Image 1 (cartoon, rainbow, N blue to C red):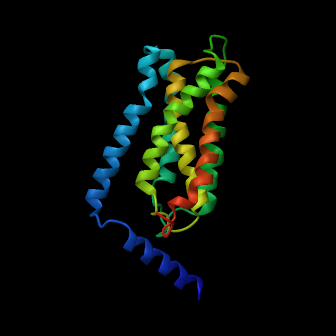
Image 2: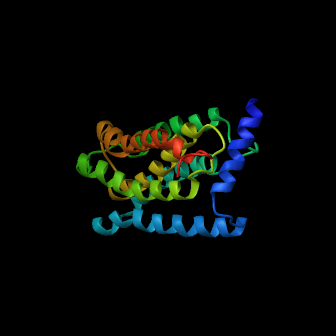
Image 3: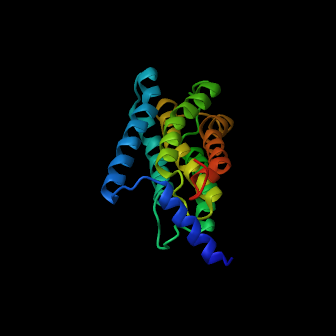
Length: 204
């Protein structure tokens, strides 16, 4: 069997196994799922009790990085089969790296929250976004599922970590690396490990 026929069979099997939805219905479903996930993800802010302008300024850079990651991880790109694995791996690697560079430039200081609190808060805020991404993207990736999963994990982690930036605007390099960036790396690795479930033809 040729590679092209194998891919065609996988696509047809995936289409047959998924509920038929119009493009508009799919977008509305995704919007509702992600909106609910974002509200849940932001819940640690309510527990923390708000933020000041300095924290919002630091978080603005994190939001820019997360949005750039999402543009590649969630978008189809110029290719019918989606972004190339090189682009997806770049998102997975550069997302956490750019967060660290940004925080080292703008958030180095001494008034940090406890490191463990920041780490756990980032994971708690990331979990709903990861769940939403998997609900929307399961059995929809045609190829390079692990790379796609890693890129999605990095994107979800980058958005989830914004909650930490809004509740802890400053810290030393060790605190920023472990409390604000390591959770994004953990989310990236989790996404890569779970990537096969995103592929068309994956077991239900």
